[in-house]
Structure formats: C-alpha cells, structure tokens
Image 1 (cartoon, helix red, strand yellow):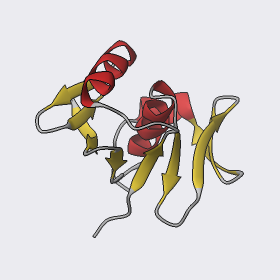
Image 2: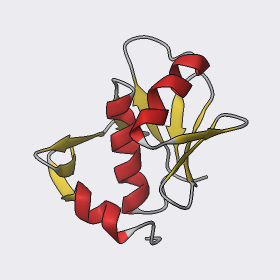
Image 3: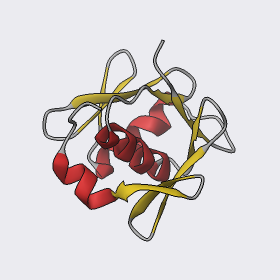
Image 4: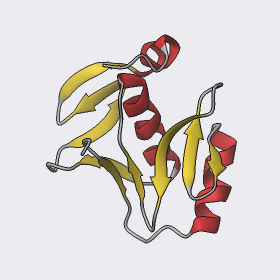
Length: 111
C-alpha cells in the first residue's frame, strides 16, 4: 500500500461541491471520482466522501496542496503530519519540500 494524504475540512464535501470548486483551479474530474491535474490530466486524487491522494512525486504533493487550498481544507498525511504552503514554499510540519512554482514546473517525475 502506498502512503496516502487526505484533505481535511470542517464540513463534509459533496460531489457537486467538489466539481464546482476544482474546475476554476485547473483540475478535472473523471468518473468514478478521480481528480486530474496538469496538461497531461494526470490523476492526483480520488473522492470517496473525502479527497485522498497517493503521491508518487513532489509534483503530486504540490497538486494536493493546491487542491486542499481550493477546497478550503488542509492536507494531512497518514501519520498526522500537515502539508501547507507558506510564502510560496511547500512545508511539512515546518520542513520545506520546495518552492511550489518550481516543483510544478519540473513536472511529475517519480521519486
């Protein structure tokens, strides 16, 4: 099993709300509940009563951080750590992963 990241929100996320929220931010929705990002429409998450992603690259993590922000939530890992964006830098509990724009430019190269 791969490591999963979850979008936490104060209120549950309905499918219709998800669809309305992600489109303006450049995400796409494919059945059954798969969320796609980037020019290649690469899968980055899935919706099953909540948004869950299984990242394979920093690019995937960056997309999940963006997605969490678009949905008004925050990104949390299986072990309870929080991923967030501060001054254009993605951090995990205070440790920097890298600059969001640079990671997105590099694309989805696997770890």
